[in-house]
Amino acid sequence: MSTNTPTRSTELRVRSPWDVSPWADLAPWSPRLSDLMQQMWPSGTTSGEFSPGVELHETDEAFELEVDLPGVDRKDITIDITGRRVRVHGTKTVKERDGILRHSTRSVGAFTYEGVLPAPVNEGAVQARLADGVLSVTMPKATEAKTTHIEIT
Image (cartoon, rainbow, N blue to C red):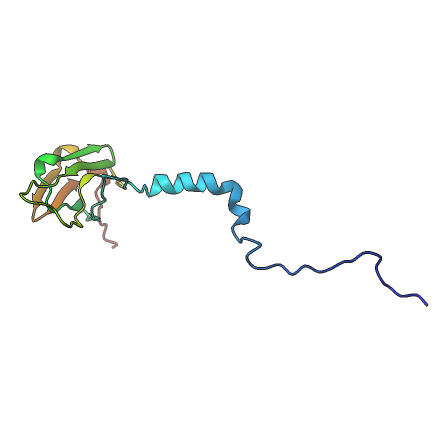
């Protein structure tokens, strides 16, 4: 009588969910994806730097940029516009005080905001003002970039 007994042990190994990563197939792309993510959303914060809150609004006539910069003096801010790229850079410094600083949670150091606008702007008509700790930059759209509403007849 013959039995189907294997000569060597064929054990079925039960794999733990921790043995296989669902991301293993992406491993060859990992460095490229990391580079892409860094280019799109740079961290921009290293020691001595902070990242202020920023909002960019678009209207039919202009782009409006608001940057939260409480405690920053206007002489410590630079705004550069080149083509469709806008860059706001500056430094928030610590005010000198008498006595010993025991605790602080304030952010200080250099900051940079860079963004690419979806349309060109009229660089000669850009206006900026700093009031109540908010930097407001109004960038009128270039003539060819303005939205024109067409009525349907």
